[in-house]
Amino acid sequence: MEEKKNNSRKKVIAILIVVIIIIVVVLLIWKALPGENDAGTGNGAGEVVAWDVDIDTEDTAGATGSIQIPGYESMIFTAGETVQTVDIGNPADNSCYFVITIRLADGTELFQSDYLEPGQGFETIELTQVLEVGEYTAVIQYECYSMEDESALNGASSEFQLIVK
Image 1 (tube, rainbow, N blue to C red):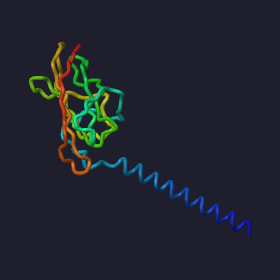
Image 2 (image 1 turned 60 degrees about the horizontal axis):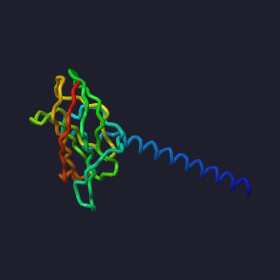
Image 3 (image 1 turned 90 degrees about the horizontal axis):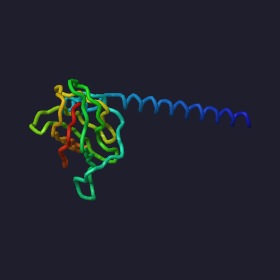
């Protein structure tokens, strides 16, 4: 009788382990599949990474449904190269997609991301053109989209000093 109980317990434990393994595999495969937003909106050049650092944010909405917007005083780029090191992204506490665009003050677009989920960002990006040594006034623009239906939400843009060395 005791042996039957032990065998039954072993079978239940084995079944539970198999079920857990199947769930983990399914979740990993699901996470790896391309999403509906992968077509994106911009050049998206750069590897999307986990992102969320302690930076200043501007609240562009009221207390309810607020969106955190990172702010930058300056960025430093390397002259004559299109691949640049950055730290830009969508704070993890947001509940919307971001599309991030970097432009010079004259409107020249240097970079535009695809949709970024909360907690995603870039450590490197590829610019649409090389820049010469100098200091430029640039604008970083955040377009925010609903995660439910991709409708446009509040957005923000701010000027920063782009230093090219």
